[in-house]
Amino acid sequence: MSLDKPLTRNVREDRIPTDFSAYITNGGYQALQQTIGKYTPADCLQIIKDSNLRGRGGAGFPTGMKWSFVPMENVSPGHKYLICNADEMEPGTFKDRLIMECDPHQLIEGMILSAYTIQADVAYIFIRSEYLLAQKLLKQAIADCYEKGYLGKNIQGSDYSLDMYVHVSAGRYICGEETALINSLEGKRANPRAKPPFPQVSGLWGRPTIVNNVETLCNISHIIERGADWFKSLSLTDDSGTKLYGVSGRVKNPGCWELPMGTPIREIIMGYAGGMEDGYQLRGFLPGGGSTDFLTEEHLDLAMDYETIGKAGSRMGTGTMIILDDKTCPVGFIKNLVDFFAQESCGFCTPCRDGLPWSGQVLEDIEQGRGTNEDIATLERQAKFIGAIGNTHCALAPGAMEPLISGLKYFREDFEQYVGGSHDSSNDSNQPNASTTGGLS
Amino acid sequence: MHMNETQLIPMLSDIELDEINAEIAHAPYPQAVAIDALKIVQAHRGWISDESLNAIARHLNMSPAELDGIATFYNLIFRRPVGERVILLCNSVTCWIKGYEQLQQQISERLGVSLGETTKDNQYTFLPVTCLGACDKAPVMMVGDDLYENITSETVTQIFRTQQEIDA
Ligand SMILES: Cc1cc2nc3c(=O)[nH]c(=O)nc-3n(C[C@H](O)[C@H](O)[C@H](O)COP(=O)(O)O)c2cc1C
Ligand code: SF4
Ligand code: FES
Image 1 (spheres, rainbow over the protein chains, first blue to last red):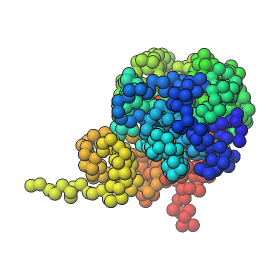
Image 2 (cartoon, each protein chain N blue to C red; image 1 turned 90 degrees about the horizontal axis):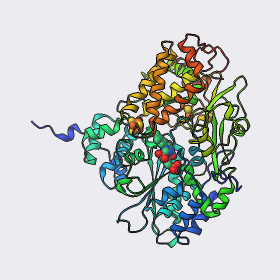
Image 3 (cartoon, rainbow over the protein chains, first blue to last red; image 1 turned 90 degrees about the vertical axis):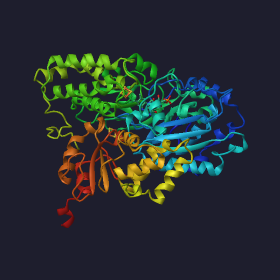
Image 4 (spheres, each protein chain N blue to C red; image 1 turned 30 degrees about the vertical axis):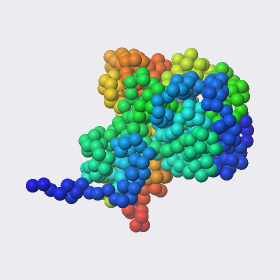
């Protein structure tokens, strides 16, 4: 049980889930016992603000500040809601699954303390349909908590009450966008809502609502138990805490590790992930899921945190990196992502609904050898137009353009080779007729 | 000449009703559980037929057209029949790098179906799915409720035995 890795201290090597009694043995629910009815919600909020915790769902918004917008006094009668965003559908992202499958009670305790801080009386876990094991474990964990009096009426004899439910999604990436998620939870099509009003004031069923990512919420009980200074001391840089980093693609040891915030990228890819598979070279990588800009070899010594990666022209996003190797075609890689976003567009606004399939078609033309220089110019125009924040109703479309814009910058010669008729795809390891030994090894 | 409406709209079973009503119990109004209700009925019947849709809409006091608008929005509500088990093969970026296209071809050939189709014996429906959140184990797929990780062409041959192989 180590204090420098709070999020994964109950994640066992064999991945056997930590159940209620094991969680208690390892010190679980102490934060809850020490807090509810003993500290005021305002005290808790102050600790979270002081900790500088930033949201782990992708945008990195300061959690304490987000919570401070929830009305606390003279609130009109009715519910307040806390929602855990466990949709995790961003391509290349596999971190929330790990915590939920290995340590479900950590999430529940974090949620109870978060709900207490904003004085929410109902909490939901919005989880994607395919996470069957996590659903089962979380439902069991909630049942355990009702039985022990950590959920339900008058928690620990205090005047604080909280109900918690699991909602299983019916599958659509846009449900991860927080206002679309709220619409989906209301039983509707998952179109994002206009902001303002912000969910903190008017969210689920028009009531004050906070939506946070799984990893964000898991941090809460540790911060409340050990304090803001401890949380800051975990990090190597100004962004505090630890982070679940992941690497997937052609590396020797793909996986997910909890490391100090600000760990150098080289250490993650070349150390923890074991470096590239034999016979493959690194060409580039998306630092935090499918909607972040490419970085390349020259960025390997940067610290993985929100500030540094932002300054390098990308986003840390979810912190789970996707590796582009030298035997995978960058145009195909980008096309795969653009097709994903085109399919998952909610259809509400034109640049996204019509622009993304168009970009996908142009990429297809280029890949099939039908492309011209004019097509590359078209992609550039589209990327600027669709990628500009404010031209679309939500962040899906700008996110979709990030790999394309940066790909046109770093891998332009690949696009030009296709257009010029000199592209050689016989080396691509993932094509059904691959001539190299890669593919399904 | 009115037909008896209940003949056109088959009833929801008692179990289905119990499960849906348990959701309604903590919702502000019945329509709020539309997605839960679709999932509950799909879990019992495999897919959502027009008849099922009408029955749910009626129970939730909403129009079938509105419910259909919701049902068709979501990838995992099936408005067409599916086989005993649904194969969800991840086609997102890491799985694509690690050989999605080869696996897709191989599965299609073994089962004699393209993506979106159901096998003649109604055993399997073959669908692509977006990133399954298991990219460190790519390529991956789900068959029914089971997740298969690091799949290879051998995995595919083992899981999907051809009739000849079973007979042999
Ligand atoms: C298209 C889209 C998809 C998103 N998907 C997710 C998701 O699956 N999980 C998540 O936590 N946040 C996702 N987000 C971010 C959420 O909108 C929201 O910012 C986040 O849940 C807030 O939590 P945090 O402050 O704890 O990071 C997505 C955003 C967009 C625009
Ligand atoms: S940007 Fe795309 S996903 Fe977002 S609201 Fe517009 S159409 Fe929907
Ligand atoms: S890309 Fe296939 S599981 Fe993530």
